Figure (tube, rainbow, N blue to C red):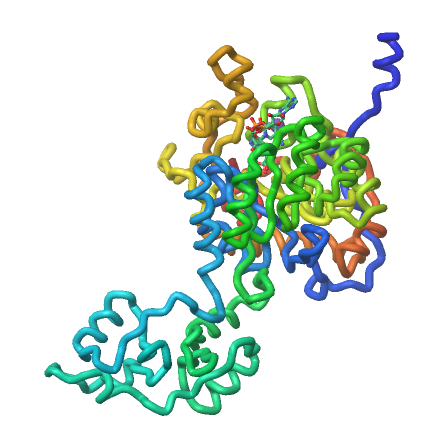
Length: 482
Ligand SMILES: NC(=O)C1=CN([C@@H]2O[C@H](COP(=O)(O)OP(=O)(O)OC[C@H]3O[C@@H](n4cnc5c(N)ncnc54)[C@H](O)[C@@H]3O)[C@@H](O)[C@H]2O)C=CC1
Ligand SMILES: O=c1[nH]c(=O)c2[nH+]cn([C@@H]3O[C@H](COP(=O)(O)O)[C@@H](O)[C@H]3O)c2[nH]1
Ligand SMILES: [K+]
């Protein structure tokens, strides 16, 4: 029996065990479309999600990623209040229509109006009387004001050009261009409802690939523990776009029961995980989730495989779960173990629709990890959510109980080299993906699924793949030296 067990054990492959075959191609890398589904209902121009880890994703990371066309998942190692506020910060960042407006009345003094504009760094104020919009006061109106007690009503522009609720961005641009105005109040029945500004429109034009919700706000995801339905509801009130049910082992009967309940009570796209087998994929899809998060133990800071002896080499886990998920049109998100852009191309070729990144993003400016200097070089802290330090902050029930009060970690606390802006990292990753898809001859991710063919390589092949027999004298932006 035991001999059989070993005999029947399958070999599982991962990123370094394979390469993709180059093939005759009509495709130029610049023409490749890397957009893909990250859930059943959300398609992203850049199919990358950031890990819900406390050294990877808070509001700044989520904003930067959504502007570029990817999605940040805010971690859950903080109170519900704190997490909800981070979600709100992302939602507020780039709204087309500003709803929380500072206003003045016709009787406000110019002095006071100037003070408000200075304090909140805004260039114009709608003038409101009995809720009705009666004028607008902008920097232009007060450019030559040199003090003295005058009222807003004396300098404000009275014939305000306005627009109704529901106006499209194109219509707004047209009105603003035609009338040479920079502020367009939204009015319903004479009452002020919001304001569109030229500044916000320009920002939108700067990020044509941004991942936005139906109201034009940046999208954001957030993680919850598998039993934290209260957190899920509060996040939904804050209009989160995606909820990740975040656990080391989603193929746990109690977790699945809870997912079923969350699915019923919370109407939002759900990503569930982590899993690594066909059976788990079947069982989670049966719960009507919108994407699967796949990867047990491949992460750079994960020790699950050595501490618990559990796991599936990542490319194997992706292909197994994808075979099931494709039948139901549920995206697989390959999570963990991705070190280079080439690994992303391999993950997608093995069936994934998107990838989730921890270590590749943890060194960026926008990651919340603490900065430190080691040997004269700048680093940022990056730690597993099952590391002692992260658990001590979050106080995990499970680990706490296991060790009779002491913690049994499944992750380490580490440092990764500082990398500058996330924009640069995403640029390199997207460029690598396009290059890989060009070699294969895939115009898009769907074509990559069918055209991407693997060849298995040996240790010698792997050594040959990396730079060898040279001393690198200048670090490439997509090939770190440490
Ligand atoms: N992707 C991976 O390989 C791993 C990820 N992690 C990360 O660490 C953090 C903490 O994860 P958790 O410990 O799951 O959070 P947690 O401590 O909140 O556990 C949530 C629930 O998941 C189930 N669960 C977790 N580990 C299990 C196991 N070994 N056997 C059976 N059921 C299990 C249990 O029902 C547990 O109550 C998460 O952010 C998670 O993503 C941790 C370990 C492995
Ligand atoms: O075994 C683990 N113990 C941990 O403490 C831990 N924390 C995060 N994760 C998982 O690792 C993923 C990020 O992996 P990378 O750094 O390789 O991108 C993440 O997205 C998670 O799936 C953990 N796994
Ligand atoms: K690992």
